[in-house]
Amino acid sequence: IELVLLDIPPCEKKLRGVCMEIQDCSFPLVEKIIPTTDGKTAFQDVELCVLVGGFPRKKGMLRADLLKKNGSIFSDMGKAIAK
Image (cartoon, rainbow, N blue to C red; front, top):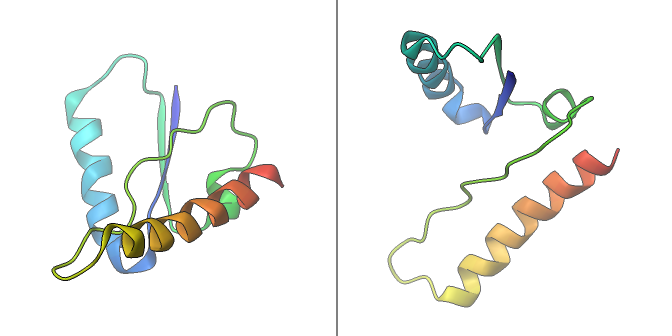
């Protein structure tokens, strides 16, 4: 298994920490971990994409606001996957 982990640039340092945690677990099937903040790199030649996360709900946000914000995030990911 080759894991490609995508996050936003402000979270790049945390993303590298996640990679170290996965490496420390020594999962026998994980052969490679690639952290990136570039969608084009993340979705290149992938066989399976699992999209998790999104924008966190903040105080005072309506559910509709959250759906609108996350909709644009996942829409951009979908476009990157399609390329």
